[in-house]
Image 1: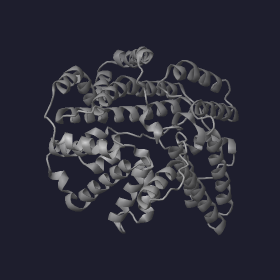
Image 2: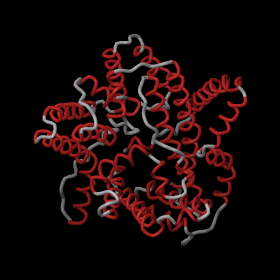
Image 3: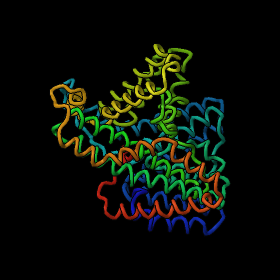
Image 4: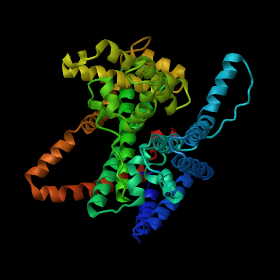
Length: 462
């Protein structure tokens, strides 16, 4: 089940919200949340619900052990147990096939490939449970004594299958005590609607164009860049839209999740881009991998490449994701060693163009899992053995020029700034505009969902 479906919006969500608010008792609310979340997950992956519950149980027990034997050998054993079991499951389901396939290719062996089906959301909930045991071991969060409360955290449907990665410490107090105010609920509806509009209106429309162009066997320079630019918009509005919906749903249920995107396409450096893009993932690797390895103090360059190799692998068991991660590792290495503070002296427009050029090029590494197709695209994008443009590229651009313009504006803070300025000037506008925008936005999304056949969530596969 996906958020941008009529089943979710018309049946699942209303039933859950009604049932959830029938009582103020926290145990009741957590029980409703768990049942709803497991049903939500089982809708697409019924067999892997067992794996989800097992993962939660393992780290619930490890957390209790760490609390009991804090700062002693028992706590260390429990932490190692958490790391080995969770990362072992992730490696088995997500990476075993990839490694066996490459061993067979390079060593000419014939090891059987298990070809496990990847459980949806395993990369997200694995990192979430690890954040709990690691923070427990570091003394940065308190133990969750109720398995019901911990399972509610791990299985919480708003962020279960595609993030953001919500650390236990972020919602620890709300798992034990929370209430939903009218303002919270209103904000949640508004945020959910904004994310839905991003997804249905912009991501799906951009993605349909991107797939049509990039999957073509005859690319020109113009069509290559048009296709990858449309994919650049698709992946941003798809993932940030999902994050907005997750944050909004969390607020409706009494939880405050952190922001996951801060207008990354207005960045003036690659470093800034990764402070704004998928914030929950980049801060996870920073706090749990980069800094423990030594951060900027010891072997900074080595640490950068380890983190970005892992970031690439986290996104998928495929060489293109490894190259994508190392691509950013190289760019960040260059910025930290060669550019340092020089970028601050370069005019902002040039910095922006430089950043977006490499970000867009990076999305090509992300899009093409087939390395031959990737190489064909790169040659076409830079005019090797292909025409500058063709009539199809020109026609596609002209047809979608309005969509490109809307996507450019929507990926900046401009609409928000304009709306806030109008609200400051008119109290009537401030009172009426948001309810109207929510009603119109949801109405348009409903109409589009009835007729759309292209409605994927890109980050579900991670």
